[in-house]
Image 1 (cartoon, rainbow, N blue to C red):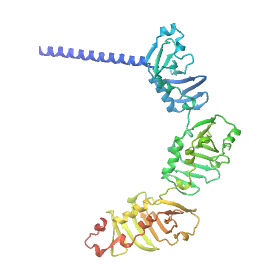
Image 2 (image 1 turned 120 degrees about the vertical axis):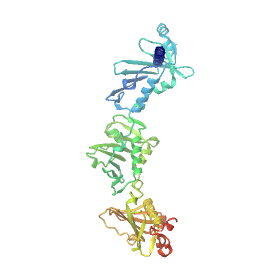
Image 3 (image 1 turned 30 degrees about the vertical axis):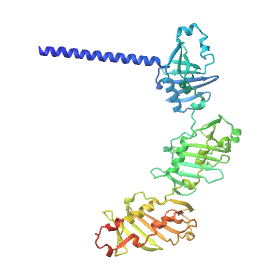
Image 4 (image 1 turned 90 degrees about the vertical axis):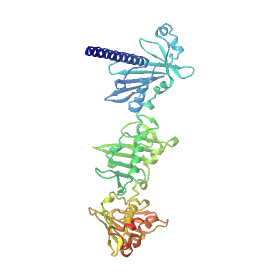
Length: 495
């Protein structure tokens, strides 16, 4: 009896569960159907094949091919994919707020169309989907409060209804809003070479070799570049957009008026220009390059005429972008020439004063600095670690002199033929960095040189103070440190 009762209870429970499930499913389906019925057009973005926007006597047509949207009328151009997505999202999310004239009333009274602004509609949007269906929506005037706009679909159901006015504003886009306005289309992470050819000035070539750390100049000098500064130029260029388009397909005479008449060079190597004020060339590998020409004629509002040589139009760019591309070499150079990539790999430091050895230390397996010379003293390990930090952090205040590696320069005027201080840092693999501190600069700074780089720098005088140390600054006599162990003077390490 108990088993039979349990079976009956279980059957009833399952039946109730089924009833609740189908009830919930039915309610959800009904809710979904109601939400779909409110939509202006029910579709998914990936289904869209073409969009036409009719604004007065202007028709804009966009078509999708191979998952990319193209502007085909009134001009042929790429599109701003984000702008097209926003347009589709707005169209998909627009809902019917209130029906003001149903199909019967709209059909019986044709004059209603003019009453609600459809005689000269503000906007028409035609959407074509992949399966071939076509929806056309016409937007008329606005409501008295301007919170809503009147709309109707063309076809079997001519009812007139309202939609939120801001939705219509977001659909009312012109050619400029939808076209590709990028000054130069590229991915900054793919750039391997950056050339800035400046008319009447210094042309710059920067390269990022495969597997190399950071950017380097190859012209007008061989030197490390400031990684953040180069990335800043590329980022500004990648994000830059045209302020306006002034000519869609200019000929050579018209290009001359904009300061852009120079004919394209036969190769990237020949890209020094005559007429343009500036040309930017980007090499992305596999013979792919991008080139932007900037005219020497300034337009109203501080803008400049420019042209991507792979496209016909001439457009205006902001002066802030031009200023970024005209940065002097000194602003693009690495201002920390004594960077130490791997501090843990350093094993030996030697300091000389006026050519005479002051002290030499070597780091042991316990990562403690041991004094090799002079005898009878103990290294202040914390002080030698501080020297590494000071070297790594040296920032250049000015670039004084540069020369080619194969050239010989007399550096006596800078006090670097007989430097006041020399610091030699050696790593596990035998590589060395020798730093020389020379004489005083009139401004109060100090001349500095790294012997493997053919340059003289000016650094702040505090760099001299941090490196121009006495033997007592670096070590303690063993007699004064007799109670400490041989691990490097722990008493001194505390301060």
